[in-house]
Structure formats: structure tokens, C-alpha cells
Length: 428
Image (cartoon, rainbow, N blue to C red):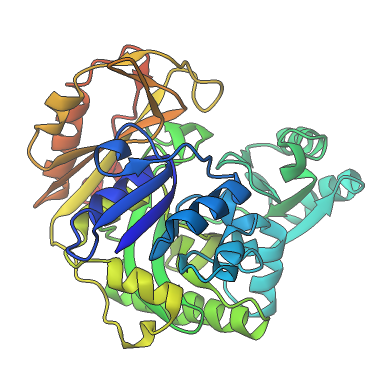
């Protein structure tokens, strides 16, 4: 089978890496790909948000399956356009992708179908005063403010005071995140432990895939601003089998049924960001309509079964007859190396050395997330640049291997958190 992967990040590198191992795959193409993906696939210089360009590429190449990595092309309707020319797509329609494309839509959807989440209201640019008054309905800080639209993983602000929240309301409704914050969702701050849960869906059926935990804050000890994710690990102790069953019964299944009832059947991978505590159980922080990044990296490295048949079943139907994919018992840890300045403006262009040495550490795979080639050199070309991912029989050993590999990478402009998986490691 010929596979076309859309995207250029660490998530797409991990997907290409895992699918390259499938005996069913004869060719992988990536648009646009990256230097790491280029070692596994043919990269074509078509941007992930160039919808017409991607459709023309698919029309010319006729892949047996297109896997859409990022959320933006899904929200822009790439899956719909590919299905219109009879090309199977792993990824939801534009109408279904609204679960991630609009925080307001997703919150209204959860309210409609009694899916557990935080209390909320949404406000547009004419309602700044009302938005600030809504802050008084909470017991006090922190306050959660979310840009309604897509903001590259940076559209969530946790305000530690009412004054900070009021200033953020003005900034967001004033265009801090461009069109993405033309309206803003304000919701109660949920206490508990965050986790990420993934299920595969074909529009009618959902099958559990895996759980993970990521680290959103830029600094050690969960300090500093939110990012797209500074690292992840799997499995997550909080998501034991009993909790995964609850998430499927209370959240995933009602979501799939509700989307079908609303004429928005959901296919692809459903990523549910969760907050879990003893009082409320699992509640939805947000939906994503694609594999998480860097959660995808730890999930793919733990998959024992070939995922291709189920990815194809999501695209074409027939998932109901599929069993859950078997995973290795090993733990996986992925450490993000980012450019200095991230999540603000990162420093780009620095040469990255030592990648081959890092990849020689047992159990380690280095996924490229934001790199480019300059002559024979690999250089930094993004905010999150590398995902140093390791597997081992224990979580402690997986983390140690990942950081051993990080220390072999010669990139003066790079930094990482040094405490990925701390919560689970503290549990012992």
C-alpha cells in the first residue's frame, strides 16, 4: 500500500517510523515532511495547509490511504476534498473537526450531551465587560481563558488573579491570537491530574487506543507559560484499565454517538484531554482531532501490533470488528528539545550535532519536529525541534535513556525540561 502522510512535525515522523515497519506498506510519501522523515519516505514540498496542492498531489499519486497529522488541514476541509475524489482518509471532516476547531462549539456540544467538563461561558469582542463580570461567579483564581479557535497550542491562559484575567480578556478579544481569539471561552479551573486518552473511530464505533500524559508548561516543576507540549510518557498510571473504561463509557462513546446524531460523524483518532480527580472522575479539558504531539511519539513506540489495518478501518468503516491494538509492556518517555525563546520567538538556524550518537543509545529514537537541512547539516527550524524518545522496561529507565541521549546532542541553542514523567516517578 502507498501511504501519504500530511505534516512536518515529530508526530508525523513517529507515524512514518511506525508505518515503515508494516509489511503491508510498500511506499510512504510525506507532504511536506522533514529531514528525519526523509530517511523513511519521499518528501514532497507541499505545505500542510495548502489544501488544493495536497488534493492535486493525492489525485496524481492515488495513495491507498492519506493520514492527516495536523489539525489545521482537517479544520480547513482536506478530508472532505480527498473523499470527494475517492481517496480514503484517516481524519475527520471539517464539520467533525469543529470539536477542536472551536472551543465554544465543543463546550456547547458537551453541554448538549451531558459529557462531563468544566462550567463555562463564551464571549465575543463586544462582550468584554460581561466576560469580566463572569469572573465574579467563580470562587476565585486561577481563571481559565481559552481562545475559541486554533492557536497552535498556545491559546490557553491560566490567570492567577482577577486583574490578570481581566487584562487577558482585553488582550485576547483585542486580537492577541488573531482570529482565533475573536471569541473567548472562560471556564472554571479544574483541579486534579491531567491525562491524554486516544480512541480510534470510524463514525459509528470507537476502539480505545492508549493513554499518556504530557507536560504543557515550559519549565521544570510545571512552571512558566503553556506550550504545545514539552514531553510525554506512556502508560500513565492515572489511566488504569478501570479509568480507561470509564472514559470510554462516559466520554468517548457519548461523543461518537452525539456527533453522529448531529450529522457530523467522527472518523479518525479522537484525543480527549482529561482532568481526573476522586470527586468528579474524568472530565474533558479539550478535544483534539488528531494524534497529540508529543503523545503520538510515545504511543507509536509502544505499539506492538501493526496499526495500519485499524487506521484504514477508520477511513473506510469496519472498525467494529477490530480488537484493541496490542502494546509492548515497556514504558516510553519523550523529551522535547526546543529552541531558545520558545514558546515565544525561538532561535532558529543553529546547527544540531550528535544526532547519530543519540540514536545509538539503547531504546532511543530521535524524532525530528522542527528541523531543516542546510547543506549537509541539520539545523533548527522551529520552536519544538526534536523529540528524544526512549523505551525501557521501567519508566525510570526510559527517562534515564532519554536524557542520556539528550546529553549527546550538540545544540547550544536548545533546551528541554529535565523532569518529564516526574509525577509518575514520584509515585514510585
